[in-house]
Image (tube, rainbow over all chains, first blue to last red; front, top):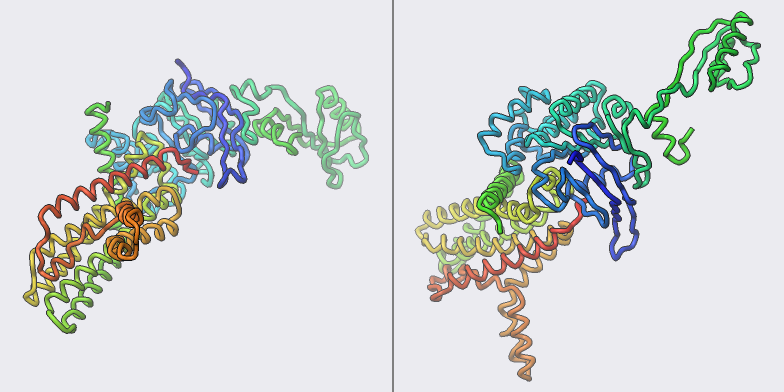
Amino acid sequence: MDEALRLKAVDKTFRGHLSIGSHQVLRGVSLTVPRGVIYGFLGPNGAGKTTTLKVITGLLFADAGEISILGQGVEDRSVRGRIGFLPESPYFYDYLTGYELLMFMGRLLGVPAAKLASRIPGLIKAVGLEGKDRLQLRKYSKGMLQRIGLAQALLNDPDLVILDEPMSGLDPIGRREVRDLILAMKDQGKTVFFSSHILADAEMICDQVAILVKGKVVQEGPLESLLSSEVQFWDVTVRGAAGMVPPPGCSVLTRLGTQLLIRVDREETLQDLLDRSRAEGASIRAVVPHKSSLEDLFLSHIPGEGR
Amino acid sequence: MASRGDRSTVVHQIAALASNTFKEATRSRVFYILLAFAVALLLFSSAMGFMAVGSIRRVVLDMGLSTVSYFSAMTAIFVGVGLIYREIEHKTIYNILSKPVSRTVFLAGRYAGLMAVLLVNLAAMTAVLSLVLAFFGGFTPRVFAAAGYIYLELLILTAVALFFSSVTSPVVSALCTAAFYIIGHTSSALPDLLVPYLTSTWERRLAVGIYHILPDLNLLSINNLVSNNIPTAHGFAIRAILYTVLTVAILMLASALCFKRRDLV
């Protein structure tokens, strides 16, 4: 059994009073998360990412479909002792100190007090909150709350860590630190399943991704198989060629005085363009190859945003 | 059948949730402001009793116990109605129920925590009333018994507030729980008020039947008996405890059933 998480045809509809104003949020969501990977669950705002995570963690109940977590059904409460969960923009009891929060959460997880006392200092160090754990949470910044949230998600040394938008609202340093923590979790053999709409972060650390659009998984798989390694197009900057007519197959994106930014789709056309530029005495300032990125893949599935 | 380990985990979880609820209340300024207000109200009502015509001891006891009773009930209602709703509204519940904590355990822990808070509140007010009575030579140990019965009423009232809190908003919960409290303190008069005007047997039976369905919180109160120095009837305590246990059990079960499949959006 090497699946950490499997969803099969999961539906979820939110119903208003007397079923007026029903809104189907998840439409047959299916995905498989192998063990030991970092899995990015991507999608635009409102796609249903948080709803999916809430269904997995037992906060919401699916209308249809199957959910298997570490080989156990979602209704089996004991499996939640083997997962760690960080909700989106985590809200904690702000009258507790960081240390008290971890003790409280540890007691709910059934971790013995002696084990908690030895484990908490290590976790606080791992998330970079040394010296801050005796402060009340109302004095924590957003980044510190995210870190204490990660610490509480790791209290039970979980096999599967589920994080909802862990990088959201953090500054670049905070995002890098969270990325490093996620990579460290993978090194410890944990499976990390996280939702995000920050594609650059996801592209840096994910082994696999699923893209959710309007409650449907539109693409899923290992990142390297989803993104082509071929160059998709080149952007060429040429200066001193105000009167130059680019060869067929080129499109001029911008024209600033004598400087042109030209996009080329084929390698042969690129060679033609470079030859013609040199012939006309223009200087070639830059040739930038573009491979397909996660953003391209993502946007290709968003109606009205595809290239 | 739950194993001993499971039971031990459940007990630890309830204790952790109760302790956290207690911390939540005692680390809030509102708790101390309410307590100070209650003590001030108690001293004021006692002072009013000394100015009243008649037996000073009786009037002070009557007003003092009434103040303790009403203020404790108001605290139970206004804190109780937000007990679950606030957790959902503030999203703090996400971190708890995503752990191996059952929703019933969560309700039980929150309930136990609030009952601990109300116990401290009641103990402080009873202590102040006892000191006032002792100062004027009117102290009776039955004040503690009266406080015990007030606590039984609080157990029921908090369970009612918890039930409504688990299914609806604080405003609706407060109105419904307050209605329960008012009905609970007036229902005992229903048979005496209605029966003389009802001509047929089935009408009388219906009136008595309705009375038995409605809550009767006067079954738990000995305030009048204490202030008038009348002994309580034989078996009163056992009946009051049984009534409380049964009512709380029914309300907790109803809360658990309503909350069990609720989506936490």
